[in-house]
Length: 233
Image (cartoon, rainbow, N blue to C red; front, side):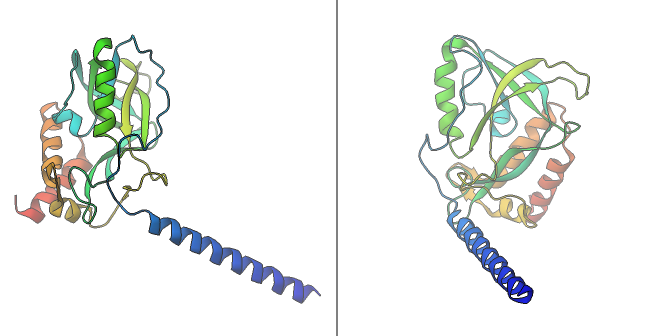
């Protein structure tokens, strides 16, 4: 009896494993990078009111091509517990569905890590228009989040800005354009091109802007060096 029971349990476990494998494969197969309309991604309500000014944190293309009206900017500022990564696929700007480019996102990590960028204050009267602009621009990013920003990377520091808005990409199933890490990440960036231009230009412009602000990002600059070497730039 115990032998038959063990055999039965083993068969059930094997069947369950195969079912999970098929489901996993099916889920992966469905994640085909593509462009899509605005409004696909759900957005949590913001904590600030419509008649208040709004702070926006830029860590990617917004640093070197802001593209919206703002009253002032503060730089450099950092978001603690995040690091910059080129894990998001771009099929609408720096690549195509057949050959996605890669754009920056923020990856959540430990509080002793920080990502540096620029904060932009948007006037209350410009708020709605700027948010509409950002929804179009960041339509492939599946999370709109709020974060505190600091002007020093210190565990005891007090935020200089609270509830700044930014957009990030995550591995969530709804994000069809998530690419994640890759051993040939530099090669992909070196080769990709989309309606907004070469993927390498995005990377180069970001690095140039961050250097101009005195921001150190060793991993980002190492990626830039690899892409330049591949392209011979």
